[in-house]
Length: 233
Length: 224
Image (cartoon, rainbow over all chains, first blue to last red; front, side):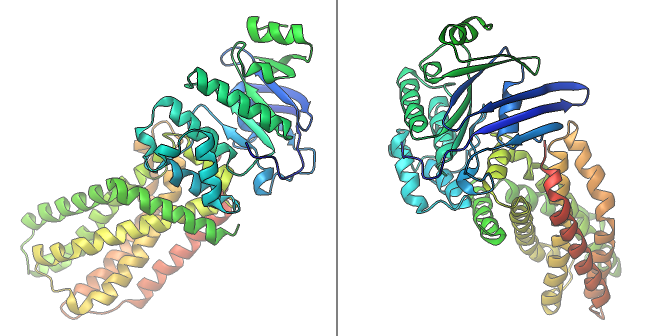
């Protein structure tokens, strides 16, 4: 993966609440991720992981509290915006793999969009299917193009919601390797995971959510293992 | 990245996906044609009655066909959550609206132009001499329908009863456009045609007001 071109950026949640009607999806969430850190979000289904990632991606506005990106990268500049991989692919089925990447590269003013799209297609292993419509792709290939879309603008913050979904074992190995390289290059990573895997081995810290609140935040190896495996520190 | 370049990129995407699937164009064209054919049996072609009622029927057909178009306008962005990726990518969310409403206006105008010969034949109304003014009225009227329709489509796509909500919000808001467009078209199709510039001016002002409102408040319509 290509090295980062902008100074690394962190992520800070300050008393973030997100309410849907009477239901609290997030309740007074406060923690900070240092620039270049790789953090795993753990928790049961419905604990608020996806909502927290969508708040961090600025797709969802918090009901209360504040989200900020400490560090030099500005969230208003294209590569200061987080790269986000969600459950949905966030790409167009009616466009080809290359057209999708070109669309998002041009929208974000990426320098030499055609070269960048080609570079990513090669990295995610879809070069031979560059002219195929995304609707003809398998689940794993869709996940690869989703990851490529998130990386197109060389973001300094990466938000991944269960990124290994649909990937085969070589795909997971590739993703873990790519994330490690990006993290080494200075990318800040926040990802939600279930259970221990090659992906979780990248994490240096785990934040556990339950009913929308942070219930554990650990950097110790044993606690990290226990959060990811058993769901508690 | 400027608003205009973002809009141009997104408009290219809208046109490419539509011309690849032809979902909206086929649906709207077939719908307008069916309405025109059905009503041509009820009204005697070439009579005063036809001249009186045909403009209203034309605009009703355009309205219903456009509501079919708006139903899927933002809904198709929800399939893969592409609206979120667009919001993350564009510097100004108004570009998303602007591209969609320009695309909707173009699709609507294209359908209308394809349907005009059928309209002239079924109702035996000569259109050739009035064509430039008729296209002008169709343009300002369709633009108004597209601006309001695109905004309502963004609201209804996130609602639970979206199929019901869209026409419920759309029809009252579009009543002024429909009434004025019908009146202006009727006076154009009269035996002694008149161009009602006041009506065309009203439609242009309507378009401007709603476009400004969309520019000011559109961002809130895209929020989850």
